Length: 123
Image (cartoon, rainbow, N blue to C red; front, side, top):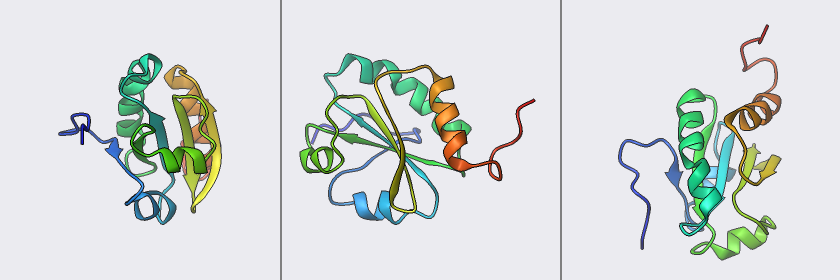
């Protein structure tokens, strides 16, 4: 198993074995980053996802799934292109974003999915 370095990082690697407990049964919304080690855009957004995991700490859990070693999960959620980010809330996909985007795009999707009660007003 060739997992990326995770010490001191908040984005947790998840696989098919622990997906149900880590994502579907989570009490907080979960942002899932479907990626592959060889994927340039995936590596490009990794620091952004890491920064967002710190920004949304306590509100959203961030996990990453390597599609090469977890093909059944990728197929189950129709992941055709990577990177694909999916936001799960109460075990259901609430939003998804395919491709590499700036932090503001992810932030907007997260804030919309979390709703007005969990996000501070922006004015």
